[in-house]
Amino acid sequence: MKWKSKEAEFACCTYATLMTLLPGLVACVLWSGSSSVIILLNKHLLSVHNFQAPMVLCSLGMIFSSVATFLLCRVFKVIPTPNLDKMDWGFYCKYILPAGFAMAGNLAFGNYTFVYLPVTYIQMLKSLAPACNYVALVLLDMEKISAAMVSSVTVIVIGTAAASYGETAFNSTGFALYLAAEVCEITRVVIIQIMTQQMTFSPLEGLYAMAPTTVAWLFLGIVVFESRILVEQNLFAKMEELPLLYLLAAALGFLVNVTTWAVIKTTSALTLKVVGTAKNAATVWFGALIFGNVVTPMQIWGYGLSLFGFAMYNVAKAMPNFTRDFNEGMLPLVKSSLTGCEPKAVSKEPPPRIIPIL
Image (tube, rainbow, N blue to C red; front, side, top):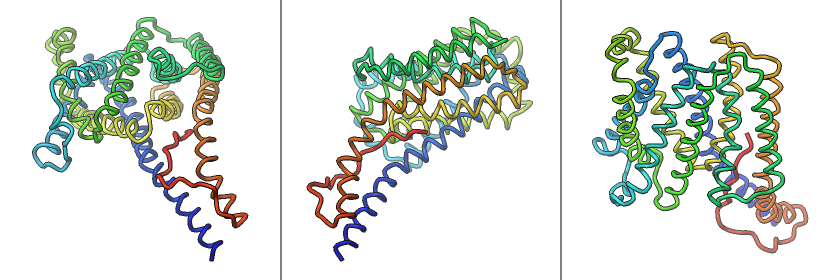
């Protein structure tokens, strides 16, 4: 009976750990799928359909998000908003306004990048994201410098440089736009992570707070940079030619926004980069297949080196926490189930969240 009791306790602990990881896993799968499809769709609309207003295109998803979250939170009241009701103007100006600006910048610069660079190369460049994220967190004193982390970041940078050298369609303007988008993205995820420590938002509640502000920043950019081309080329008539595709782009933008919040909330900003790197590798293949982008041997070598550096980075980041959690939680239960002896101390608290290695 004692053996069965230990076995049942071990099974319950394992089940609880899996249930803790499941929400993050589901969020990661949904985010990676929807973000891959919208990348390919936006590239098609900008290049093949010749829709020359990237900010207008990315604003569709944010407008859809604003309307959808307003209906869910305020009209039908399906989503409770206890934190939004407590939010004051000080909190809004400190967190929501700058995060919305960073999100608008990331969307705008990211979509303009597709005008100058092939989709395969853009996804290769995104392997640089974990390195940029680490440097930003170190500068903000949210991460510590270690030899393993610095080594992995160095490998990632060398691999990205090799992939850039092998790109036959390299464009300096496109590369600069990518770097600007990455700076905005890092700023956004860091602000969100700090903000959720001050006030806990559900994914839809957080999006409801963020989307209208992002739309306002994008509208300002459209007025300044794209209003003339909208009128001269009658781009709204182009949208009427393929209304379902533009509606799909808007709906996918909403899904990406919700799942981005969900990934950060159920895991971390780092996990968002982890899953994003794996997703980008698949998008490189689909981009070459669909758009016929040329991928040179130098690019393959450089991208492979970047992924290897990313694996080093992820292991260096995740293993200390995994070892600590296993030694303090699971290992005593395993030993007690094998020996029949009571464990010295087993925490009754829910298992700690482990960042998955994908």
